[in-house]
Image 1: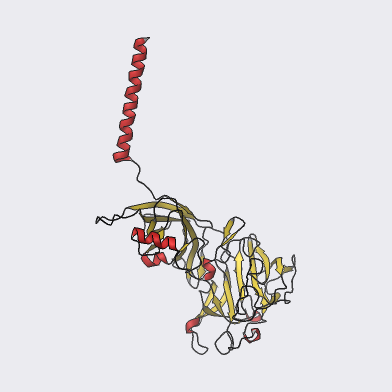
Image 2 (image 1 turned 90 degrees about the vertical axis):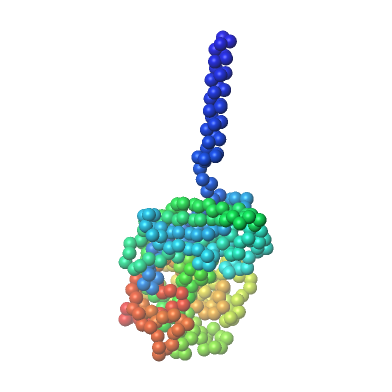
Length: 406
C-alpha cells in the first residue's frame, strides 16, 4: 500500500509539473493575442437603397469600452462578402472622427471634462478616444456604384490604440485589433412611394450621414430607437426661389396649407390633432415626447412598414384611425406644429407603429426631377436630372409633376 501511494503521489507531482510548464509556455509565447476589450453591437441591419444615383448602406455600430484604459479608434475598414478583396471603405483621422458620437451627447456637442482629461492624459489629440466605461456610436454610410449587387454581409476590421503611452520613452503606443465583426445586410423590400404633394418644386432636407435626423437617437422605456434614419423635411420653393417671402407669418411660407396626399394604399393606425400652430422661427418650449411630432398621421403601407406625416396643420386632418385610404387621397394640410420652427412636412417610414419607438427604414420615390443642391438653385439656372426609384440627397431641390401628369 505504501508503494502504491508513493507511485500515485509521484504521478500527480509529475502531472502538475508538466501542467505548470505548459501554462508558462502559453504565457510566454503561445498565449492568444490580446484583443480590444470592447462590445460592438449593430442594432439594425442596413437595407440597400438608392440616393440620387448611388446605392448606400446606412447603419450604426455601438462600441462600448470595457477596458480600464482609454481606447483610441485608429482605423476602420469595411469589407464586402470576400474579406480578401479591397475594402469598400477605409476610415481614419478626421473622416473617422466625424462619424463618431458619444452616446447621449447632442450632435456636434463639445467634449465633456472627463473626455478632455482622458485625452490629455493619454496624449490623444482627436475626438476618436473612447474612455473607460464609455460608449460611442459610429454612423456608417457605405456607398456603392449603381447596379452593383449589395453584399450579403459586411465585415469590419477595427484598429485601436490601447493604454497610456509612456511619454518618457520613444515607443509607439500598443495597437490592438478586432479582426472580423460581421453585420448581415437585410433583404427586406424597399417600398416604392408617390410624392406626398400634388406636384411643385420642393427642397428635401435631412438625408445625409451628418444630418440631425440621422444622428437622432431616442432612449424610451429601456430601449433606444432611431426612427428618423431616413426622414425628410419637405419645404416648398416659391416663385422667389425661397421657401417663404421673408415675413414671420405661417401663411407667408409657400408650403403652408398645402394638401398632403397618401404616398401609398394603406390603413390609418394613428392620428393626433389639437396642437396649436407655432410662430415661425420660434421653437415652442418645452417640447415633450408627446408633442414633438405636433399633429400627425401614421398609416400602415406594407407589413412592418409605416409612413408618418408630422407637423400637420391643426384641424386639417381628414382621416380617422382604421380608415383605409388610397394612394393620392388627401390626408391633411401642411402646418407648423410640434418641434418645428417653420411650416414643413416631416416624413418618415419606420418598421413599427410609432413615430419615436421604431426604426427608420428606407423607401424610394417613384419619379422626380433633381434640380440640384439648394445652395446653388436659381429659378432660371439649375440642373435638371430625371430620376426614378431613388431618393434625393440632403438639401436637393426636386420637382414633381402633378398627379394627373405622373
